[in-house]
Length: 390
Image (tube, rainbow, N blue to C red):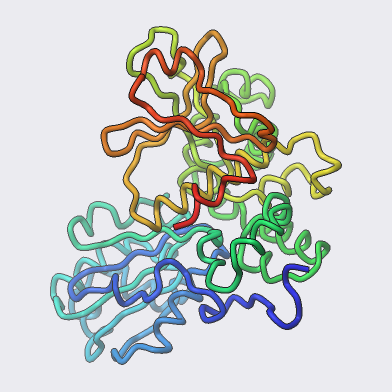
C-alpha cells in the first residue's frame, strides 16, 4: 500500500509542504493576499498553518459570520477601521460570503497601509466579481489546486509516486482523498466532495436556474475529456440553448471545476480554432460524475484519464513554478493533432499524451512543415515525471 501506517500522509501542512509555503513570502503591508481555489483543497489549512507560526498580531474571522458581513460591507470608515484597530494582520476565511468585500478591504488597506490582509475564497469569490476593480493594484492572487505531484515529493519519492499512478488516475488528488487509506474510503470522500461541494457555489449563483441542466452538462464533458466540444451539439443533447451552455461553461471554469483549452493556429487555413477542449480540475471529480472507479484493467477510457491527469499536473507545475506559457491544442481538418501546445519563450513545444508509447512517434507532418523550429515530445508513464516535476 502507498499509504502505510508507518508513513501515513496527513494533511497538516507539516507532513508535506504546499507550494506556497512559507506563506509569509507572499504577505506584504498595504496589500491583500487572495487565495483562490476549489473547495476542500486546503486553503483554510494553509492559512491556519501560517497563523500558527506568525509573530504578527492577527485577527482571524470567517465570512460566514453575520456580524463580520455587516461591518465589512457597510463602507462605514469609522466602523471598519475600529474593527481592525491594533492588529497587524487581518485574515478572513470564506471571504466570498461578505457582500462588497472588495470595497471593505480597499478602505482598510488605503487607510491602514501598515496592515496585512489575507482572504481565502472558493469559486463564488471570483464569480461575484467583488474584489477585481476595488483592489486593483492592492492585491496579489494565488490559486491553490488539489495536491500536485511535486507537493507529494516532500514525503514520497518519485518511484513511490509512479507505483501509485493508478490511484491518482482514478481517485484524484484532493488532500482528503490522498489521506484516505482504502479504495472504499477514497470513493466515499471524493463522492461526498463532488455531491456536496462541486456545484454548490454555482447553484447559489443567481444566473443558474436549472441544476439538472448543469449536471447533465458536466456528465457530457466527463465523457468528452480530450475531445473538441461542440456547444450546439451539447445543447441539443441536454435541451438547452447555445447561450445557456456557453454561460454554464464559463461559470464552471471560474468555479475551478473545469479548465478550457483553445485551439492553436498561426499559419494554416485548415487548423481548427473555433472549438475547445475541457479538462476537469481533478480526475476523481471526473470519475465521480460518471460513477466509474473501477481499476485501469477494466476501463476503456485510460487514454482520457491519462490526458486529463497530465494536463492538470502540468497546469499546477506551471502555476507553482511561475512558468509563463500559453497553452493550446492543435488539430487540422485532416485529423492531424497534438494534445498540448505551449507557446513559451518565443518557441512552440508540442506534447502528445500516450498511455502506451511502445514505439517512438514522430510529430505530425503538417506540424513540422508549418512550425519547423518547434519541439515535440511524447508524455508517457515512462517519461511524464520530467514534464510535471521540478
